[in-house]
Length: 187
Image 1 (cartoon, rainbow, N blue to C red):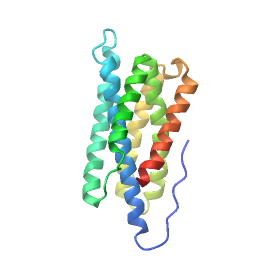
Image 2: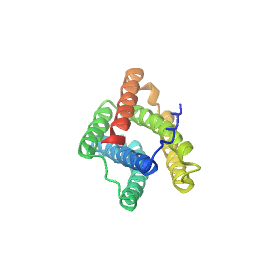
Image 3: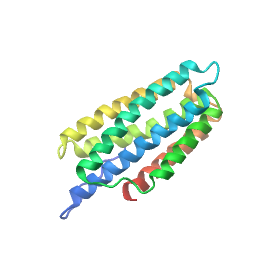
Image 4: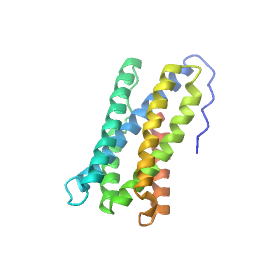
């Protein structure tokens, strides 16, 4: 499920403005992802019988932290401000992670599966948009996308779709992600 690339805008400074949107939203997404995993680990990290899942979550958070650090550097390099909603995304990510983890391992995995499905399409559209204009950034995004797909696949293998109320839970999370993407590009 790939989003369509945003067509190039005409006008002076349009390319820089679009790059700022891309970097801002990707930074926000990685920030949210780190906090989702932190929320899940806050619930499952020390719970008896969840050690394997907690280890998976910690490893995935580590990948997201690397992505976030790279976007921190790119924001600084290109003099782009992060989203003004970063504090909200931190809190919302943690709450989403903790809330789904309270529903159990499968619901935590359903959260990962839903988020990473949206992010894969989002990154794919950006890669298509940037492949000719900024091939180096497109290549970096492709690496990140592949890691996100790995997270999604792990979640599916762990029974994400067996979570209680999976269709509704996944639909709500995907809708929330898409909304957060649109808002974070601009604000």
